[in-house]
Length: 296
Image 1 (cartoon, rainbow, N blue to C red):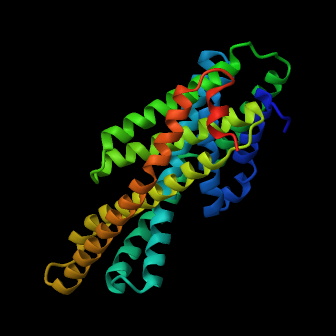
Image 2 (image 1 turned 180 degrees about the horizontal axis):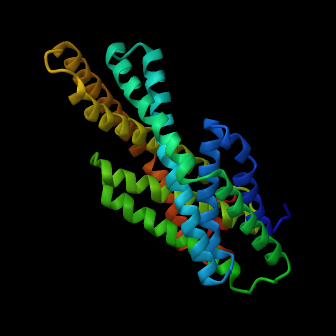
Image 3 (image 1 turned 135 degrees about the vertical axis):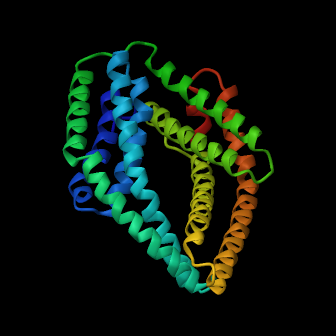
């Protein structure tokens, strides 16, 4: 990719990430499903700054959002099954309770995969890919307006503002829904920074790495929170006379809640770095805010 990437280059890179694993996705590969879903998010982030016709951009964004959501249903269950296996292997959690949870999740995951094939046929993903490929060809033949780079940097600034507001709303208290908002805002901010850095020919530096580490912590926290909710949903299915298993599942929930508190404390230790990056982006002027924020 050139020092200053063209719009078509930025789109093509993300499109290749979206399409290269579609064959494996069709065969049920978990890794392919996750990477295709992440690629759909990155495509959604770049569409608004490509200077497409508003109706074209909006229509493609809706189709990609549906892809993200449909893949997300299966992805979440795959993640939970992997997390349960990890907890079981650690030996620090009750094996009987985890086995109950694993059986229920596996059945749900199998059903979700069957529905995915009906709701999101692989041919639909190929059609979206071809449409985006055509858009990329059109972009190569058109010179961007002078405001293109400004729009990229303005989007980064807006994402930074949204993240700061989410952090302020969450505060230092462990509140599940508000931390979820922070996680989503942080993810979108990272993707916007990636676009701005590539468009400017600037390598992402330590700030971007710090954002990724904070996002990973929040991602793990989210997974454990979702697992807690699933255990609570599964627990009523345990026959009431089986008080031993019921209590073991109670114990599992308590242990997972303690894990969430530790992860939250770990995130709070990194929150200052996240805020500092947002502040550098929002107060920078000239030369592109993202360029100053992430230069190594």
